[in-house]
Length: 491
Image (cartoon, rainbow, N blue to C red; front, side, top):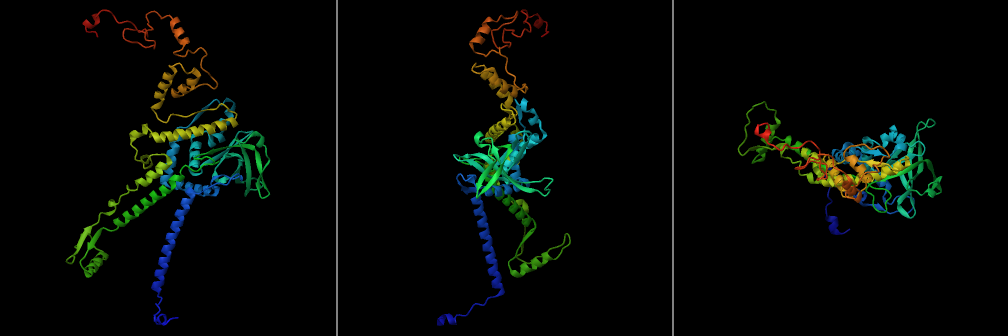
């Protein structure tokens, strides 16, 4: 120890200094925790794993997806913005329902109360939309004998068994769930594999799957699985949730609104602002405010005191956070006006072009999955019919179909189904167009027109079955040659 150090007086530690130190440490700990939470969110958004063919999924780690899905479920259940995003997508894509044809042999399966509840109803499709919003993947299990459908999401899912040469192809999907039986009323945890419809026939008969570490898991041969993933990328067997990209912006927008609400409450609690030229005058004003006053009492103030009414909560802006909401809406594929319920009534008749494309793309994806399920239900030629996204489009589309048929390059059976759907005419299962239907602008049509003899009093000059100037194709009568009726004032 040097002489100078020995002569330096030690700073005395006081209670106040300790409290100050603890406050500073708590603040630093809070900042570090916030930074870790942000880092965790970034990892959840960007941390993708490639695990190879170890019977596990490539892409986003399964545990991470399950954690994100749990968080998203809470948001779409109790969070206004996320719930609105989810319902906007579901109402646009599935709100008008979906119908089917060519399932005569599978009528019992399609009309089953269980299957209607799980897949063939608007409520079922809305639930599927919510699952895609939070989980990104749904597995449908179809019983081979009863044709009853079971579905489960990411919460019960385990790592799938993949094709060794194709990471996108799941041969078997894994499920862990609690099964309750009379023998075990408290339930037992069951882990089982199911063969998918993408599994080759020669590989689909395995009794057990080797998952390593001398562990083999049983395969339930009573069911066949169909996996419906969304937002999948090349090389991934499963997808990611629809609303994952919207989550961080919905959190920020919700936080902004809450902060503005607290600010408005704080301003509303302060009615007047006092400004004084001296500390003594400020104390006098403070004492006057603290003392209860009667209504219409007289207030006396010292010289130099200024009293000004504050604007209050009405001066707080809640609209400046709209760009945050716009980011959440863009990530979900909807418009910010619809998200914030600012759409005009006239806009209800016309969808935003980008929203329409989003809905059409998801419907095409659903059509593919529904046809795959239809094959397992003994409806190999299942036709999926979606209602039009806009109310005025059926008439226009019907005109386009008729005009296309007039070119002579389409067969009657090719336009019969689409045209009947647009003009709301139901078609019997398996029915076809008449064999003697004449296609316009073909040699057969021209020959038939040349051989046809016009009826008495009609003309075929127009060729389109309508009256025209000087022609009475419809046979409603001829115009009189004289103008007697006009001269008499009768017309």
